[in-house]
Image 1 (cartoon, rainbow, N blue to C red):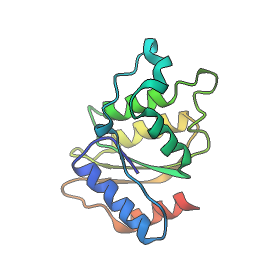
Image 2 (cartoon, one colour):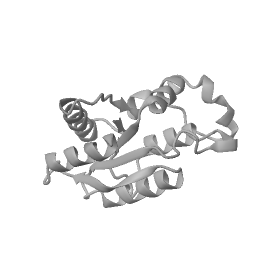
Image 3 (cartoon, helix red, strand yellow):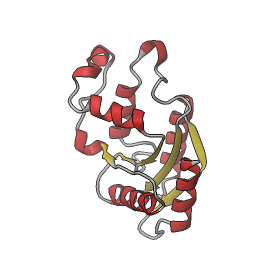
Image 4 (cartoon, helix red, strand yellow):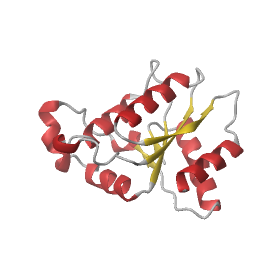
Length: 160
């Protein structure tokens, strides 16, 4: 489970992780907001191996069979923490898709505005990077709780 912020989206990542464990799967949560990576720039692009925490993130993501990415809508798109982390993780110029190709990815959000824009932005980015993004997504907010059946179905799709 990769979450781009704390609070509601971290709690949603916890729901996914708990459900995955109850289903007999391994599940870890990576909170990108806690990692506090420096802003990616082309000038820094060769620093991937010296950015604190980046090697651990890359190893964790490489070893996972699939990812559940959970992020709030931010100005009609993704939060900067997610975009920045993906920019750092796609710095292998000869094959910038290496980490992403054929990886199953589920998308979810807890957003005040409904979250459809962040889901579309994440779907576009992860698809472009070569991921197999699930058609089903989860969008929740203060008036719409995360549907446990959707969580279970998405986890089943990611596990198979």
